[in-house]
Length: 288
Image (cartoon, rainbow, N blue to C red; front, top):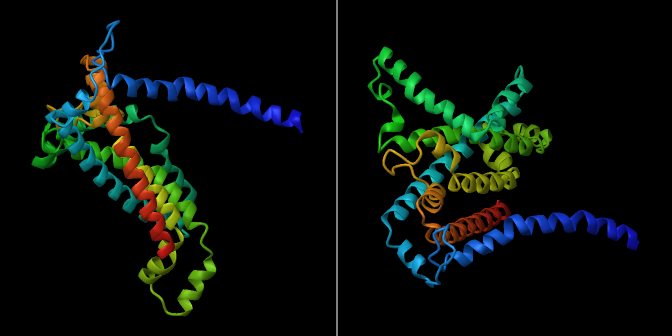
């Protein structure tokens, strides 16, 4: 028995050490540096206490980044879950070439976010504009990503297009756990499709709804790659997310300690939102 336990330790301890060295320890270092004035390069630095945190709440750039990120995350999370649930219900029905369509809808998930971003950057700049000019559609004749007021919609469109793939598969997995006998019984009782959805389908896939809502919100709040590939935070700072601001300010702007403090706040915000989501949605599962 002791030998068997030793084998388990040899499998878990190295992974735990690697996780601590490359994840936990750097995170703790970041928390420490958030209380200093280190620029990321100097050999010396001074402790400044909570000054970095104080100035964060005075910074308009930080406020704009949080506003864009929250706006983007809410829209993307809602649209992804609505569309992916509808698509999953369609793919769960008895249609021709069902497996083919399932593969097609999952394809965006296996593509790199940066590759998808650069492809759509080209489409927005060189393809959609030509279509708009040829069709006489003024709204498509100019690059959407070049508009300060509308660029975030282009980023949201690409994020939704790619994010639907994973959520659709998860919803599809949930739909396949529902016994068909329940629908047969509801049909005998005279229930219509809308009643079947609200009384049978949605309550039984509630755990999958919780997972998808949390994952979609978390991924949207952490958006970075798409911003880099599509707009790089522009035009101006119209599409600068929190993670993009932390990267550009910390690694390119010499604000390492300042953006470390921003990272700590960012982590707390995501953790709080995720916990609130999970608790509320799980409580709703029991009520259903």
